[in-house]
Picture (cartoon, rainbow, N blue to C red):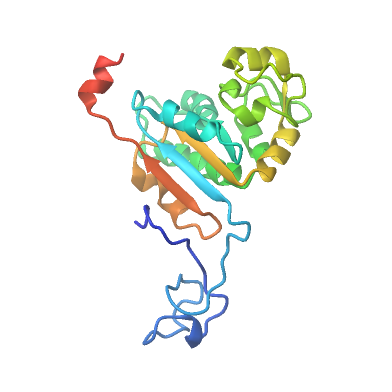
Amino acid sequence: IRTFTTKSFHMCPIPNPNNCTPGQDPTESPDRLCEDGQLINSNISRKTHILILATTRSGSSFVGQLFNQHTDVFYLFEPLYHVQYTLIPKMTPSKSTTDRRVMLGASRDLLRSLYDCDLYFMENYIKPQPINHTTDRLFRRGASKALCSPPVCDALGPTDIYLEEGDCVKKCGSLNLTLAMESCKEHVHVAIKTVRVPEVNDLRALVEDPRLNLKVIQLVRDPRGILASR
């Protein structure tokens, strides 16, 4: 799995010997990824998509806040909570392989949409269903600086620079997902923090997606420290 690569992924525009590695037949797989030659970059915007991946009590919230404080970063805190909250009650008690695939597929689809600034996709999992793309049920909205700042929230003044998470929800009111999408598109990078991806291998489809410029930050902590922190 090419998870931690410094090179962005590219695609051959057409099966052409000039675009691919010497000695390979370009007609074998027109859609395959190529390493050498003239390439077309599929991630046109060159946004950097950052995924902070960890288990609980491993410092992911702290690392996420480092990105959250940067003005170029649109940060989301645990959006996969909504997938888990919606799908787990529908699963069998044994949590079969099929159930796990459903959860994994839904999580990957949501992450892909959020990296593309499509926040409407999240409405499939927010309960109750948002009305007119407006909701007050987004999990930990106040943990995202972008969702508590203009144009998403115009209720805050110059003295609200160091706003507590709960105060953001009280002062800003319901979240307009349309404004949140516009804010996301204006930012240079998108960062998402989650503890709800059980295995790095589950991210393979996202890592190899040429439309993304995904960078994964995996945090690992001594399990003794995790137990001691509870």
